[in-house]
Length: 133
Image (cartoon, rainbow, N blue to C red):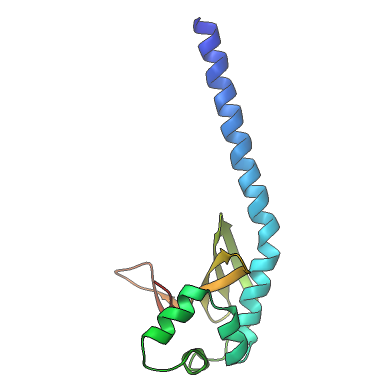
């Protein structure tokens, strides 16, 4: 009985380790698409940037009432499209370009930008100029 529980614990560890490796493998498969979306957002015109935003982010921008999506994302400084770092975990990603930090989310329509114009903050992880709920 003791030997079986040790085998069972070893098997659980093996299964959990394989599951983590699979997730890491899936994340690495998603990285090129995440980087492409971030680079396209960084170098795109306002209409392109709006098309690359997650639906919830577009809704939040439009609900703010201050301006339409194209005007808000057009107000972001022109950004460099060179991706310096991309980290994917599950259906979320963080991408740092030369001039910006973006957060992406995977939607039914592929990877979309959930937040942009993000800078580190002392009292919060990031403050973003464009973000969803």
